[in-house]
Length: 93
Image 1 (cartoon, helix red, strand yellow):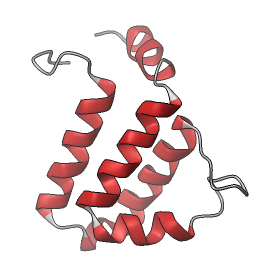
Image 2: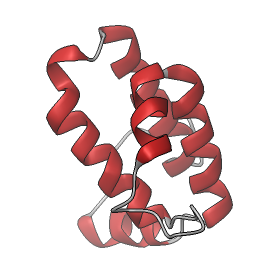
Image 3: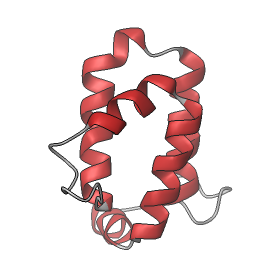
């Protein structure tokens, strides 16, 4: 998959898919749930968020929390990303 196709696919992520992604991460990773609940940079005052802001928060979460993230939780993050961003689970980048 080339970079342009990848970008097009990411831009096509709906708010509903982002919401499902956030819920799955909250259920799978307690620390993510704890930090996402108090997040105020990437969320609006009414607690809404865009797909872009969720991914930005996830990036920061991984960067800053990586040493404490359990390997099972990293697997759950990868599976969550795959479920949202890849329509065909048998497709390999």
